[in-house]
Amino acid sequence: MSGRVFHAPFIEVNPHFELRGIVERSTKQAQGRYPHIISYDTVQELLDDPAVELIIVNTPNDTHVEYALAALKAGKHVLIEKPFAPTVGEARMLFQVAEEMGRLILPFHNRRFDADFLALKEVVQQKELGRLIELHLRFDRYKEEIGPKVFKETKRPAAGVIYDLGSHLLDQAISLFGRPKAMTKISGKYRPNTQVDDYGCIVLNYKDGLNVFITTSLLVANPQASFVLHGTKGSFVKNRTDVQEAQLIDGMMPNNPAFGVEPDASEGILTKPDEDGRLTSRFIAPVQGDYMQLFNEVYAAIREGKPYFVTKDQIIWQLEVLEPNK
Image 1 (spheres, rainbow, N blue to C red):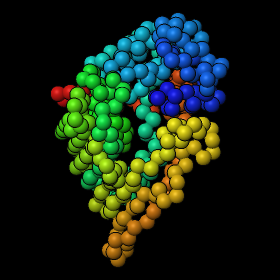
Image 2: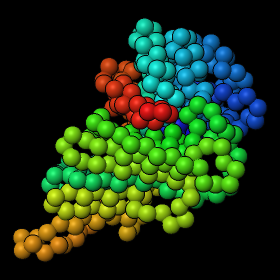
Image 3: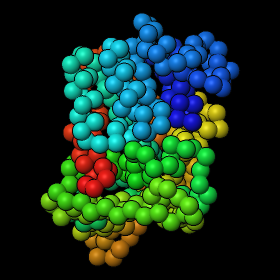
Image 4: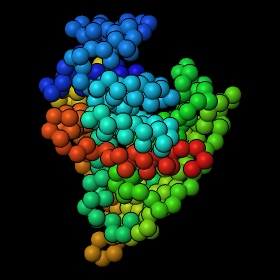
């Protein structure tokens, strides 16, 4: 699903890239949509292709390190899906090998380009809310049944909802505010027969007094507002309204003018006192989502030497929180 939805469509239509091939070990489906590509039978065939410069690792979470390491040692640049690695130690090792090989290893965090998060980011940057006190970031779903994806539902490195969905929210928080001074993490298993956590809450405390509450759950039948920010001068609330994933699943390509455009009534609401002290609310205009910007950043990092938008330090800080017993 990751390759079909979040990667191949962007590589296909971005003029900076050529979609060379995809590893398909069993069911061969990619050539039906992309007839010009190579369907590799094994990872080694991909690694041995001298025409390939960049490999996207979007395999099950517990194999990210293995395949990324092999790609780097084969002299390829790597774009690696979240979570970057199960542990801080493994992440440091990958960055070290990339440096030794003279190649880039780039974390895939497309949710920084969600329309709803971009609206929150704009509010934070405009500093309309005064001193920030409290931010709530949520990723809610309702899936009581155990899913068919074995790597997500069995006890193994980087399994569970905190690594899966929580990593998105944690990356968003770190991208806005940096490394927290303290952290509290709670996880739980509530679905019948689940082997992995399906609920997680992370509280980040920052030195300026800001508290960030990250919550993700697979058992929320009535999803709450996904972005709630309170400051000394007002509040901002926005639901999860980004449409890019749904559009991609439906087959829309990223070069469609309608891609990433939120529907009507998706605005966030900013509430603050007016000159007379009365609380008034106004809509914050939607921002167009833009996952293609991530791939433009990948190109700029490889071809132009531009610093990538997700830094090594940010990944280390993220895994300091995600890693078990931390």
